[in-house]
Length: 265
Image (tube, rainbow, N blue to C red; front, side):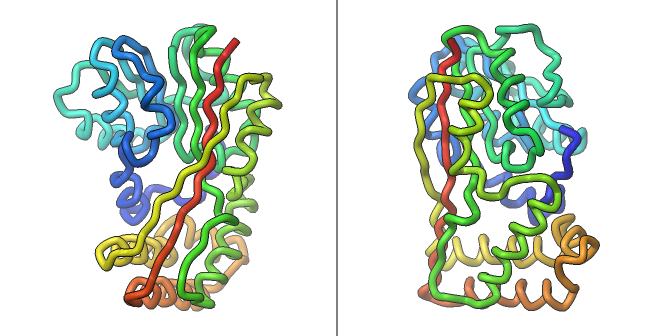
């Protein structure tokens, strides 16, 4: 995946990634898993979802791939003593596996960052066996909603979408997944959506805190300033807005993601 990953791998980003599990991020896929399946997890990051998928296929195997060797080391630590999971560097545009290798190919919050999501889905289709599944879930920033109205968060959303699109991605990917799937030649597509909701004091502190940090310290922050989309002062103001939202006892935030399950013919 040669594209720019907008978020990068700052601790504030991985803080979010490590929270993700198969249960809270791949629930739409789990009922379709069988104990002996072989699964490819594309863009696995620190491996928390990958490990959960491995637990659900005890007689099968899960391979997680990512482009960043350092994050794969974290994934291997996350996998612990599980014998049915492995990790490797990989490129979704040139998956190094024969046709029809996997029963399931899964990608969580990956396609939104790619300049050619259709090409990526075509490669995922190639390595999926006939009758197997391609599963993808991606956020839709334009569909995210929050309360109360914090002007700095409106600025955050507009800025993030500009930066992401400037990097060649599509931050409103969730609503487009089924379109990309059909363009990749996938005809049996089931469409769904789900949300993460942050409203308790602990959830607000975690979600608001990581975005405040990400706004001023991550690769996203560097690209926002370096690309001329914002000044450092703009980012500080937005980070303060995240902290203000997190401190509000009425604060509520819903992250909407689109999902597709594609049966390969």
